[in-house]
Amino acid sequence: MASAGHIGSVLVTGCNRGIGLELVKQLLGKPNPPQVVFATCRDPEGARAQELKALASKHPSLAILQLETTDEESVQAAAKKAEARLGGSGLNLLINNAGIMLPCTLESATAKDMLDVYNTNLVGPMLVTKEFLPLLKKAAHASQQKGMSCGKAAIINMSTIGGSIEKIPETYFLMPVISYRCSKAALNMLTKCQSMGYKEDRILCTALHPGWVKTELGTDQGNLTVKESVSGIMNVLCNLSEKEHGILVTWEGKTLPW
Image 1 (tube, helix red, strand yellow):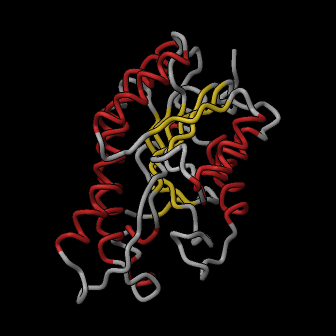
Image 2 (cartoon, helix red, strand yellow; image 1 turned 90 degrees about the horizontal axis):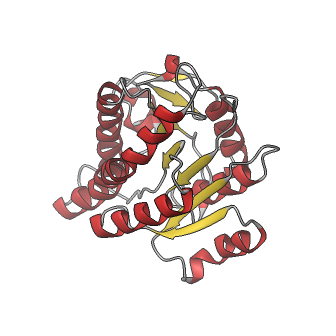
């Protein structure tokens, strides 16, 4: 029987750069790597996916899937390809990582800003989870493991402390990105709803704050490198259990308030 720390199959969205790309690298570099890692991005043939393609040429277990998280047909097509590759097995771990953050203050916010960011950061993860849910359920029901874990079946939604309503006095002036904050607060609610809805299926649902990372999205003002953040995230993923079901945790495994 596989241990709770071993993840047989994983799908990560938004993998052409930043945290998504580093997650794929570190998953493949584990002493006991997953049998299959699905890395998704909007344009696998584009210039920005070259590093991902180079990884795939070295790792037969890495499958690159075209997936635009806000396009239902694209999500459905990716799910069919993943199902075929899994060959009757379920999907153990879904990491909804793809997201955007646009400059947006209370004064500058427009309806389009708000809706574009909400669409990518909330609607996208909802659509992806909905489409891959049968594969997650299959993995959960087939597992002999007790309790909940990423080795059994889990949904990880990449969130942020910036979406925490309780913590906003500490973060407001550091992150004046209103559309991003609101979208991640909504993602936190989605995570909590998923934790209620999928509890009987024993699918772990957790929101994760990766820290303030130096990425194209997080700007160069972050205090963490991508490698440091993802190294912490990998440790957290291996140790998640039902205790973290339906909560927001940090890359160090600490609990954050909603």
